[in-house]
Image 1 (cartoon, rainbow, N blue to C red):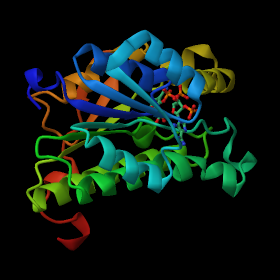
Image 2: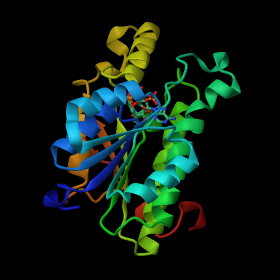
Image 3: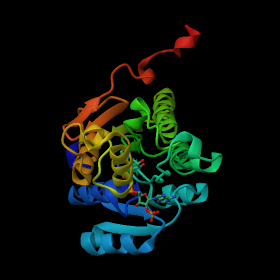
Image 4: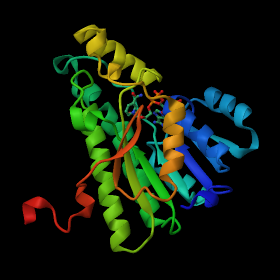
Length: 260
Ligand SMILES: NC(=O)c1ccc[n+]([C@@H]2O[C@H](COP(=O)([O-])OP(=O)(O)OC[C@H]3O[C@@H](n4cnc5c(N)ncnc54)[C@H](OP(=O)(O)O)[C@@H]3O)[C@@H](O)[C@H]2O)c1
């Protein structure tokens, strides 16, 4: 969507109450969007509304509920959807996970991206709309202390690429893009894992120690940038140094490799 069109556009952000989601909601509101923020706990959402004023609508709800996805897509017809909500997995080595704790991010992060992506394609959202999903750098590097987290985030990247392909095939004009942020101690979730890896490997070896730490404000600005022109790749790595396209994404290939 061109820069000047973000002003007045309806944007919907899941997991908007804290961390990256709060930074994303604030950046979109500052750019002139009318932002609908979803999270389960009403208190922090209301605090954010008090800070952002009339440009923000708080919707306390479970983003992983398919009925919520259908209702909110129908009610707001957002031009920008940011699927950011995510659970914090238990920071433990694999043998200390149960199947239920291992699969937590599949039940929240992946399930919510699945439901909302499906609704966006079926609605369909208007041509020129953008759907951004929050994957993770862990999808590339792994995350041995967080059970099924890295696999769940890799599934989100693939799901987003599949949706981009379906949008292209049906000429819907809806852009789907996955963002893979680097681990940062600047949010509740990130602080848990920065501490867990520092305890395991020593502070200097923690993944978050590589380069400047990513902030929620930088994530917010990156998402605003992604809705503008010049960002036509299907997936981007996001570090303290900014967005970097992930080359050779499978959405650009005519057929899956195993069929060739
Ligand atoms: N921080 C990092 O280092 C990092 C790195 C890579 C990727 N990510 C990804 O970036 C996203 C945001 O992470 P964060 O660090 O900002 O996490 P965070 O600080 O823990 O915030 C998570 C947000 O998601 C909401 N949420 C969780 N489950 C929800 C549900 N079922 N329905 C609605 N809202 C829900 C939370 O509010 P309620 O609890 O009130 O619902 C909160 O607003 C996640 O998808 C995460 O996996 C983070």
